[in-house]
Structure formats: structure tokens, C-alpha cells
Length: 290
Length: 334
Image: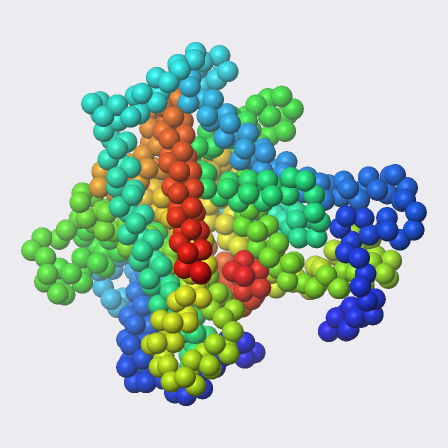
């Protein structure tokens, strides 16, 4: 479990000035980071009068009612299921496609390789707002022409989201794959593996941390997206990012319910992220930042 | 590890790309050769198709739309909308008319916001990562805490901040007004001039962990021997940070700052979730402004022209930035 970075710097103990600066800085920063988390957790356990009146650091009484009410005020379960389906499918597809693409770039020389990597990376720069409406029109037209409903469906959202995480995923996996010694590939080739066999038997198993990191990133990207979800979904396919705003449309905002719902929808990603963040750091170390 | 030892068995195999089989005796059969040449393209095909469908083709259509008069009358059949030449662009940058003035205001606000947010994110992330380079008790836990804002879905985080910034029942005013007595009146945070500060705080809170994550990963690639050698030479820890750590981070900083800049400049989620569809003028980031110009007023031609201008601006800034930093790096190395 010990991380490779432990005891990295000089073995001699750092001076007091450094220790104090570190203590003060990290404490203040942790306070800043945790403040909203505290507000979210504590407010979700408060009765309504505590959150509609003047703010209280401590609840006047603890209640778990908001956690039951959130499912009634808006159809949160449906939004939840939609988000799970969309983010899950987008993650699986995005990771698979990125693995193939990164394998091609890291192991082959071919004309157009540089154009591909530069183009893919530069799509990261596009303002989402520029292609939101055209994409919407394309989806509507594809629907009219072929009967495949992309606008308003989960499929269209999955397609959109998986391309959002593709550039970064490909970029990171290229770096990761390149850190895997070619000798392994060649040994597999001698054993009679084709290129695809080598990918599945050698490269993918050796790159699991990188792949996990990319999957975490892809899932978080899809789970948190707001702009396209607000345009591309309807009542039945609405995801959490839009659905959560439903609590605010009532005349009186039930802040305790809003906080409870925010907490509930955050738990899957935060738990997954914190469990797997080790891989993200290793993946980044081996791949992207090299 | 077992696989790795196998790797030593065949010495000096020719690298596979470029036809390893060809050298092994006689020309390979044509289909096999074709397959080998085509394989990388086949592997790239899904990624290319999807990028085309979702990014590149829509972008081209978007550019085309910026030359058309695309109001609600033509949206059903947008192909038949009349061409408008550069009219949409003229309207967008005409500083004597409200549309152009609003766009300029939004652009300046976005510039100020991005510079501030990128600077703070970089500073917090780098400082925290350097302080946490060495192991200490609670380091793992603290790292998890610091990464939480990044892991939280953006809407959950921003809604919580919106609650904290409420005038009457929010936490911020409770501390500033009720507890510290710093303000005479309860200030508004999500309306008027203060909204810029609110926006910056939320954006920094949400984005700095990314800088932290990247710098932390980059720090692990600095060879330990550098620090050992420096420490033998009598360099203190502050000197080591200045002479070894910061220079080693320069390559990654080049990319990190650029990515942070593009993200914050294009940020839509934070202002949209914090203020709703109509952001106050002092926090009217350009993405929200264009969204509003397009979807609220149903004038997609002008909205597209604004998006294209934004894209051009980002392209120029990115190119200039890469040119400047790469040249700076080269001269520094000499």
C-alpha cells in the first residue's frame, strides 16, 4: 500500500518553517474544500424551518425525512436510472474505442497519425456551445431520415458523451501504452499472437491502471454533464444533471431536500473516484504527464 | 513479471510496425500486407467516425450557420434559410449597438474571470502538491479530501454553493453579517457586482484539484537522486523546491495552464447552475451569453457567429501561447 512517492525528498528532516507553512496552508485549504461538503451534509439532515430561515451551523433537530421526500418531489429514481444507463454505456464504449485508437497510435507508424492526434486533442478546445445546436439539428435529421431516434433518447446522449471523454482518454492511454516495453509485444508475436491478440493478451492487462483511470474519467464526465443534457433530453430520458434543478422550480425551495438529493447523486461518483484515485494518479504518472 | 522475463528470449527482433513479416523471407501475400497496412486505420475508425459525427461535422455546420439568417422562422428547415454574408459578424462586433456592447462586456468579464481562476487554481494546486510530496501522517486522507470537489458532480457542488450564497438563509451572509458584522446590509451574492466574486470562488473551488492531481502525478517522475545530490550539497528544502521541483514542473505546467485556461474560458456549467439562464452582467461568461443569444432570443445565426469568433480567439491564443512557451523553454534550456 505504501505509495512510491513516500519519503521522496531528502532524508534529513525539513526545517520548522517548512513544517509550519505546510500545516497552516493545508489546514486552511482543507477548510475551504470541506465547507460546502459540511453544508451539504448538515443541511440534508435539517428540518425545513432550519434551511428557510437564518442559516444555522448546527441543526435544531436531526431528521432523515428529506431523504424520503426527495423521491416524491421529483421522479429522482427515474433520473438516477437514466444517468446510470447513459454514463455506464458511454464509459464502456468510450474506453473500448480509446483503447483501440491508442493502441494504433502507440504501436504503428502510418500516414495521418499526427493529424489524427492533433485533431482529436484540439476538439477539446471547441466551445461546446458552437456545436450544440448543429448537433441537435443533425440528430433530428438523422431521426427523420432513418427513424433512429437520437434526439431526446438515451442513445443520442450516450453517443455525445462518449466523444467528450475520448480525446483525453486516447491521449492518456497513448502515453500509458508507450510505457509498456515493446519486448513484451514481440515476445507475444513470436508465440504466434496477432496484433489484436497482443493487444488483449499483453497490452491491456499491463495497462489496467491506466484503463481504470480513463474509465473513471469517462464516467465522471458523463455523470456531470449539464449543457447537452438540458437540450437533448425529454421527460422520460432526463438525467440527474437536469432533473436536480426540478427542486428549485417550486415556489418555495426545499433546500434540505436539494442538499439530500445532491448528496445522494454524488455518492456513487465520489465513492468510486476516491476508491480508484490511486489508479488515476498512477495512470497519469505513467501516461499523460510523462 | 513472468511476462517480462519472457521478453528477453528473442533478441533483436525487428519491430513489428512496417512489416516485420516481410523481412522474414519472401514477400508476404498481398491480403496479409494490406491487412497490416489497414489495421491501424481500422483501429482508429470508430474514434474518427464519432469525432466526425459529434465534433467536426457539427462544427462545420455551425460555421455555415453563422453566415445565414437563422431565426425561428427558418429553424424547421434550416437549409433554406437565406444567406446573410458577414452580416451576423458585423452585428456581433458592432460596438455602437447593444448586441456588440454586450458581447464585448461578456468577453472582458470572461477574460478577467479566466486569468483569475487559472492563476489561483494553479497556485493552490501546485503549492498543495509540493507540500504533500513527502509522506506525513494523514497524507492519504488529505489527498482524498482535496480531490473531493473534483469528484463531485458539478451540479451537486454548484447547487450547494448557490445555497451558501443565498442572501437570507445562506451560510456566507450568516458568517459575514450575523457573526462577524463586516457588512451593514446583507449583500446579494448571486445578483449585481458581487456575483463575479461568487463565480470565481466556486470555479476555483471546483477546478483547483485538477491542477493538484496533475502536479502530484508529475512530481512522482522527478528522480529522487536530484534531491539527494542537492541535499548533500547543502541545499535546504526551500532551495530544493526552487531549484529542482519548480523547474522540473515546467513542461507539465505548459499543458496544465493551457487546459485550465480553455476550460474556464469555455465554462458554461458554473454560471448556468449558479445564476440560471440570465447571469448578472458582471458574471456573464461568454458561453452563457451565447447560449442566451441563441436559445432565448432564437437567433441562431448571430449565436453561431459569436461562437465562431470565440473559437477563432481561442485558436489564436492557444497558438500564440504554445509558440511563446515553447520558444521560452528552448532558450531556457540552452
